[in-house]
Length: 403
Ligand code: PLP
Image 1 (tube, rainbow, N blue to C red):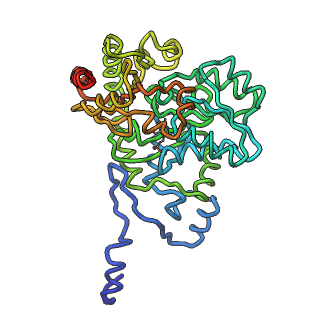
Image 2 (tube, rainbow, N blue to C red):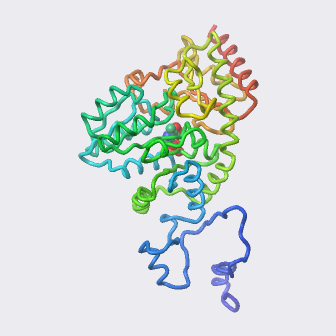
Image 3 (cartoon, rainbow, N blue to C red):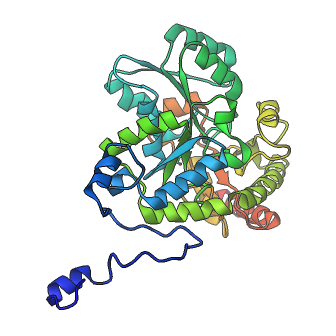
């Protein structure tokens, strides 16, 4: 096609649009293209008109993203999934998809990821949405709020960030549906390995795939798993508003899924050991981990999750510590990384008042139960005894610094 053409034309077109290979790649390639060419313009017209499947433009979808979305839906045995450029883009799209708009009412768990809280506490009220925050573990209070407000949607996390409260999702779905509300469950902490919200009545299962699904701390992304019908509405939203996941990020995320169950087994086993050790340590106050009997929703967690598996996330308070003392503890860790993320293969610690829940005022944090002594630990897949050793060493060292 470029033979005999000028160097300008050869430079632009050579090597592209060759004959289709007769092999099938084992792993879905990264389709790093914005546009797609079809032999017939009628085909392109039909795809634009949703009369046949295909790809026309990267914001509308790509084969790499479709492969990821098929895998995500399969993980939770949902009908469909749609990927986003970040977890927050997915959370926001789910709210729009569920019908949250001017004049409607939304019920949100107040113990929820900081940016989700900010959407609910600041962005949505400015847009004319009435938002009621509730403790979703108080089913009686929730029932009252639902019948008084008749919300279009309820948003909550299966395991909450950062206090690890466990929501009784099946019961909450029944209650919300009774008043006509859709249920959006952020399933990031539980992952599809522990829990599949749609099977328990949820309308949207949202993930920050940046976390366990990607799993290696190298890719930002988000996803919603839902029915085909709801996906079609979300697809119209993403076509208008963007927020897409790029094909390279989709490919990395898809690769992460392949080892999710194997990693989760190790995360859960390690976290159980670390939580029990923390509970027995005299320097540690409250330990929040759904797998220990002292956890207020331990029975709910046992009902929702497969036997003996309670996730990889823990939070705990260092007894009588100030913010500065918590900082010294975090700096004294040698293997565990103080970094603003979770769900990676690495063990990570975070100080919620400084990062994930910084946007909340001190009063809001106090109301939610996030104290200045609280540390969030994402237990990695290293050797459990070596994670414990690092925690012990850092607690010992930081206690000496305190004098
Ligand atoms: N949901 C939960 C539970 C999270 O912890 C986070 C981020 O930490 C998000 C949503 C937002 O995800 P992202 O950072 O991918 O936008």
